[in-house]
Every structure is written in structure tokens, then in C-alpha cells.
Image (spheres, rainbow, N blue to C red):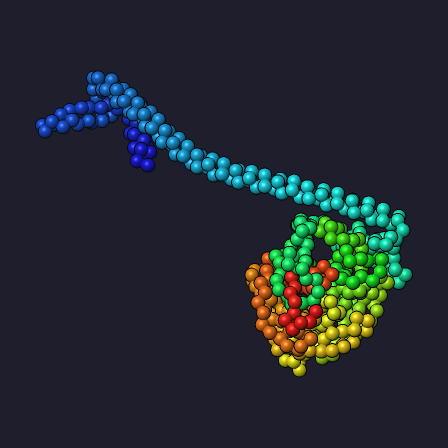
Length: 461
């Protein structure tokens, strides 16, 4: 700033000198007694003439002032240029940073677009394969182990979604498959004992499939240990996703391989909605609890009609006496070597587990036992050889089967059989006596456990 002020001062002085020069002004120099130099400007009058040599001196001063003005102007120009250069550099640096950020975001969006395009192409390819397979099945007559997708029940409308394989709501495009050796189908110790007995051990879980949607958070899956007709065999796999307000779809898979790959051969639409994960399949029928009620339903799988229904006397339902994980698991149906069972509780039992053996045709109660273990303190339960077993936790990775009740003696006791919740949210555990395995649904994963039985301590076989 001081450079600019000086420049203005010099300019004013120069202008004054130039004006005086034009008016015949003169500059006088003299030394005072103290040795200081004095400059005196004099304007000529009509009575006097200019001092000799004053014009030459004025010209010298003007030259020097002009040179000084030029130097100051050059200096100011350099300062301004440097200042503007710094501002421009900062602005250029900011623009460069913004440009780099925009470029990165554009590249990320391009990558996301390419990934989504690949996924869409894969889904379209799988959809085309399923459509071709469905069309080929429609053109074939019914076979012993496969029901044509295009075959319709006489009471089923032609637009029933159960037969619509083009509807993405009934297709599954992704599966998680785990291969395992056939030598591990049966536990080493179980080969020496094939009859009924007490549960001795449970093997590690083997994953067969992972659900790819939120509706598969928990559910129920099973195989019929005693199939009754040629249409469905003990290889057929059944599955219900239980996370939905109105659960009615029952998926059927030809075998475990098709189940692992996610290719259902048929989807049945049930006449009444399903409550939670307590369903089971036995002797050609699906047994389940009707939603928001204590009503039990037997649905014949071959003829696809409601074969029988019956209220389970005094049973709690819809959150009155569930397992510890909730999920409206008030009534849990189970199957073992001795038949069909219901695991539940009543107000009279004050939340303790009640076991009833059911007639598989009429669903009437044949006999009932009351235990002393609270239903809401255990995560799950299942029946093996007429004995009830409970699982202590549904989330702890290494938990135990902690209680057993023998219906033959009416005696319950604490046990400790290690059990693994590999995926930390086990919402269903059922026993298949033909396979001698436990079937479970653990946090989107459908798994099985090999089990080993030992001879009963009271000599029952």
C-alpha cells in the first residue's frame, strides 16, 4: 500500500513541476549557513527574466522523477502479479481437487452400473432356463416322482401363482451348497445300534442351502420319513418361509440336489395360513397350526386338499407360550418313530411344556404328558423315540441339549449333549427318524445334524 501512496505523491509532484515548467517557472538551489541545500521555485514575472541554467536543472529533475515513477510502476506491477498468481494457484488447486472427486464418483457409478448389468443378465439367463424347463415339463405326462408344473387341480384356477414359474416371487436364483462325503451320512457309532434309544451325541451342522431373501430369515424345511404314494418320495424336500404376514406357499423340491440349487418342482398354495415354524410332514400330509388359532390342520399333499382339522384343547397360541426366541412358536408339531406329537403349553400348566400324542388321521389327542420345564426358557424342542429333548439357546454358538423327558416313564431329567448354532439364530429343530438326522433352520441357513443314539437305561428298545 505504501508503494501506491508514494507513486501517487511522485506523480503529483511531477505534474506540479511540469505545470510550472509550462508557465516559465524556475528552480533555484542554494546552501544555507548550516550546509543544508534549499530548492526554491520561482515564477517569472514581466519585470524579470528566468535564472540562467534553470531550465536545464528542471529538465534533470523531471528526468529523474520520470525514471523513479517508471521503476515504482514496474515494482507495483510485479507485486500485483505475484498476488494474483497466488490466488490463481489456490483456485486452480481447489478446482483440481473437485475435478478429481467428481472423476472418482463417476468411475464408481460406472462400476456399479456394470455390476448391476451383469447381475441382470445372469438373472435373465436363469429365468430363461427355468422357463424352458417349465415348458418342457408341461409337455410331458405326470410321472411317478414328478408332478408337471402345468398340471392343475380340478378346483385350482388356471392363473394360480403356484404354477406360475415366470413370477419372480416364486423363483429362487441363488443357493449355497455344501458337499460332504457319503461316509458321514451316518455317525460312526450309529452303525452298531439302529433301534430306539437315548440321544448320545449330535454332530456338526452341514449346510444345504442359504435363503437369499428376508422372508427366509426363519422357516421350516423337512423330508417325509414315511411317504405314502409314488407322487412324492422320501427324497422330496419341503420348505416354508415363515417371515410373512400371510404364509401359504409350500415349496416342493424333487430331491436334495434340486433343493440345494434352488429349483422347486412345484409350489403349493395352502388353504389356510401357517403360524410360525412348527409344521411337519408325515405319511404324505403336511401338518401345521393355523395362523392366530389353536387349530391344527392336516393337508393331503397328493390330492391337495384339507383332509382334517382339529383344535388342540387349551393350547396357548399366538405368543402366549412360545419358545425363548419368540416367533409365535406356541405349538410345535413333531414326528418320530412312534408317530405324531404336539409340543405346547396351557394356562393350567402355567407355561410348562405339555406333550400330546396325536392321531395322524383325525388329529385327536391320544395321550398327554405334562413336564416341569418352562417352554419359554428353552429355544426349541424335538421328539426322538418317544422322548422330548430341549435346546438351551438359539443364539449361543456352542450350547447344549439340556433336558429330556421320557413319555414311557413320565420322568424328566437334566442332560448335557453339545449342540452347535453355527449361524447364531436357530429357529427350528426337527427330527427325521428315516434319515436319523436333525433338520434345522439357522439364520437363513438350512442345515442337518447327524445324531447317535444309545441303548435306553431302562431297557426299552
